[in-house]
Amino acid sequence: MSSLRFKELTKIPGVVGAIDGTHVKIPAPPEDEYLFVNRKSYHSLNVGIASDFNLKIIWLCVKYGGSAHDSRVFRESTLHSQLQSGAVKGVLLGDSAYRAESFLLKPILNPKNNHEKRYTDSLCRGRVKVENCIGCLKRQFHSLHGELRYRPQKAALLIAAAVAFRNAAIDLKEPPFFDDIPSEDEDDDPSDDKEDAATISGQTFMNYVVSKYF
Image 1 (cartoon, rainbow, N blue to C red):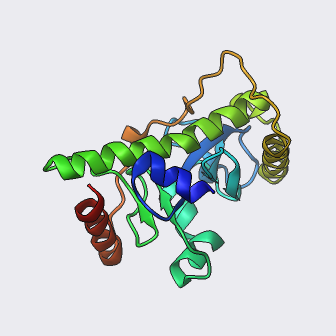
Image 2: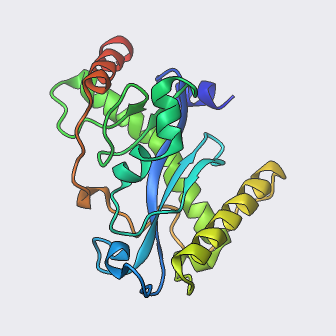
């Protein structure tokens, strides 16, 4: 079970996955071109992904251009609404770009004590899972690492199809793909993201996790 394996790795109970965003390059679209220019000044889709412990993709969002922030992509999703309402149970691990919530934990960028440092180190070990997931996806489908030369709507469909095939490969226990593409998503540097705030419940939950488990 994914949550048990995450707990073994991070000491944090209830974790069902890790979340991140990755940019897939596309040509400049003829409509609303500015919405697709990302912080590195090329046109892209900002693809939201959450993966489980086995690197299987459990959530995908392909409807935002590169100008959208990772946190916004998640906050405006059905998954966020379901976690917020309790319709879906579990905790996600995100980087500093996300907002801490009662169902999403993020690192503490400037730990004040050993408890906070151990918490952040453990969380980052768990969050590596989604980075590896994105790397595996882009190794299997090289066009996602390069450029999808289609308009946004068709590019989004192709990304969704690639994710479906990637998950099928995991279910069939196919060996991972190996080549010269790094396992981490080299297009994304968390240090470039402006840190999002924490909700009151999110800060309370993060403080609870730090004090109880670290």
